[in-house]
Amino acid sequence: MRRIANIVEFVFNPLLVASLLLTLIYFYFPFVIAPFKNVIILFIGLVTFLFPLISLELLKKLNIISDIFLTRKNDRLIALILLFLFYSVLLFLLIDNLRINECISIILFQIPFILFLLILFVLVKFSIHIFSFVWANGLGILLALSFQRQDDVLFQPVIIWILVSGVVLSSQLYLARTIYSIAYRSYVIGLIVSFLFSYYFRFIFSQFISLFL
Image 1 (cartoon, rainbow, N blue to C red):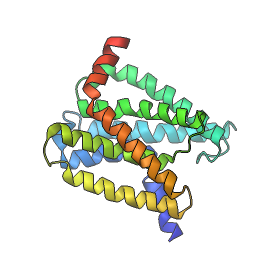
Image 2 (cartoon, rainbow, N blue to C red):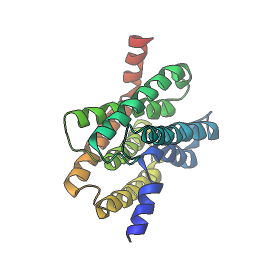
Image 3 (cartoon, rainbow, N blue to C red):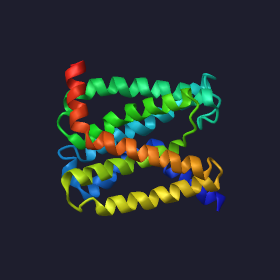
C-alpha cells in the first residue's frame, strides 16, 4: 500500500498540475485552448515541471537546499522565491501572447500568484499543505470556467479532478505528509483563492496591463 501511495505522490506531483489541467481541458473542451493545442500543453509541461525539477537538483548540488523534496522550511522558502522570480519574468516575456487565450492566461498568471501566497504562508509560519493547496487551484480554475460559460461541458473534468484530488490527498495522509485538518484547510483556501482569481481574471488582467504596461 505504501508503494502505491509513493507512486501516486510522484505521478501527481504539484509540479505537474498545470500540465494535467490543460490536458484534461484539451480532451473535454479543446476549443477553450485554441489555437495553441498540443504545442502549448507541451510548452507548459516543460516550463512547469522540467525547470523546477532541474532547478531543485542544481540547488541541491550547490548545497543551497538539503534535498529536492524540500523537507526543511528554509529549503521551501528559497525554492519558492526562485520559482516566483522565474515565473514572474516569464510572464512579462509572454504577456503579449497571453492576450490570445484567456484559459492559458489564467493558468500562467496564477502560477506566480500562488507561489507568492505560498511564500507569505511560509514567512508568517502558517501551516499549509502544498499538495492540497495546488490541487485545489486546479479545481478552482475548472469551476470558474464552468460558471463563466454556463454550460455542463466541464462537468466531467470537474468530477475527474475531484476524484483524483481525493486519491492524491488520501495518499498524502497515508504517508503522514500532513494531517487531516491542515490538508482540509489548505484545500478549502486553495479552492476559494483560485476560483475568485479565475472568475474575475478579466478584471485582474486589465488592471495588470494598465498598471505595468
